[in-house]
Image 1 (cartoon, helix red, strand yellow):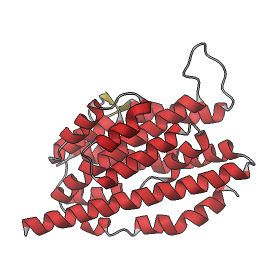
Image 2 (image 1 turned 45 degrees about the vertical axis):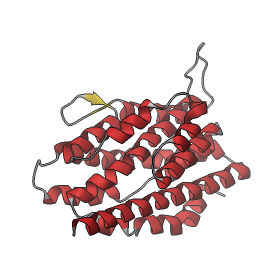
Image 3 (image 1 turned 135 degrees about the vertical axis):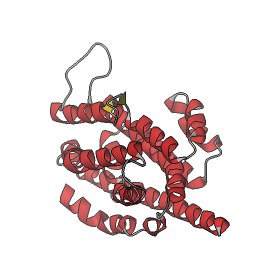
Length: 257
């Protein structure tokens, strides 16, 4: 099995995600607020997947030793540089997670729950229990639980699968349409974040992440099978999260009416 076969097998799930009813619900600023208040957990756990890859694929301990695969290490370090210490629209260094929080504040979304949740996070060994004990909705809990169960395997090819195939494709484009309707420079932080997201994922991170998986799996059939299984679960979790957000937006519209 190779990366092309994986992509073919995943195509039905990816199409299900691309054609999800959620996209037809995103029509107003209040819809974006509701979306971001749940999606922010996926932005945060993406960073956790990335740092897990950095820990496993680069040398982050002392004394330093050369890594097995410098190509993969370089790729991960490049993504960490851009995701953890990028430049925002004011040329201030910030992580993409922090830029997302700034964009949430800009559009009037509530950031208090995610901040409270992160304040309660301790060591990796206790993350799953913290998620379970939280008052987060079940879709977000399930999404985060899958991510950290994957991270705790400490198997780079599985973590890379969730990192590469478990993400959305259409949200930045949908958001930009709404942002543009609001008028030029109405939401500069959100617009900048979205355009940066599109730029990095499309031009750099997407193709390189596929190469990373190829290098991690090599000729191992069992690893390729793991990648397929993990990728399917990641996409299923994303679909469940989208189901929840779409339902929340619909319920909010019914209340407004």
